[in-house]
Amino acid sequence: MFTFMFISGLIVFFFKRKHFLLMLLSLEFIVLSLYINMFYYFSMNNFDFFFMMIFLTMSVCEGALGLSMLISMIRMHGNDYIMSLTFLW
Image 1 (cartoon, helix red, strand yellow):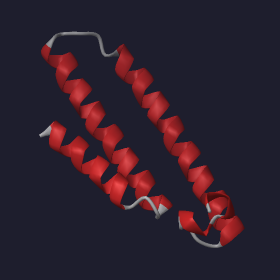
Image 2 (spheres, one colour):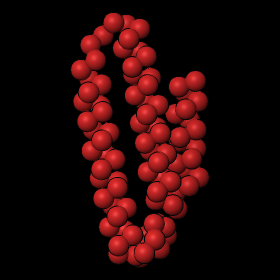
Image 3 (tube, helix red, strand yellow):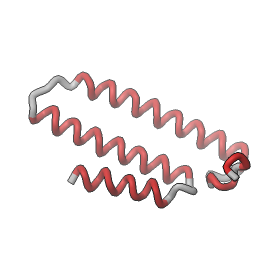
Image 4 (cartoon, rainbow, N blue to C red):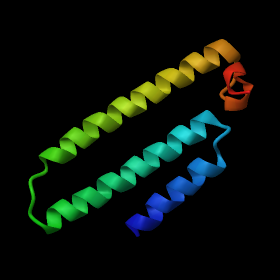
């Protein structure tokens, strides 16, 4: 099931690559599926959960950076379509 969550997040990421908000949501879904997979693996093997806190910290930083890029894109260009940017042509 966790592999299906990860693969479906990747599929959405590849097919919605023109829309920045959907790309960010699919990245967060991929991070969530990786977190659930790590939690399941660590709890089954009786490992320490300290690495999961580092992973959550990095994923929050990734989400905050993505949202700040989205806000700056909307303020500059008026939408969040990636193909409207001039440096990608």
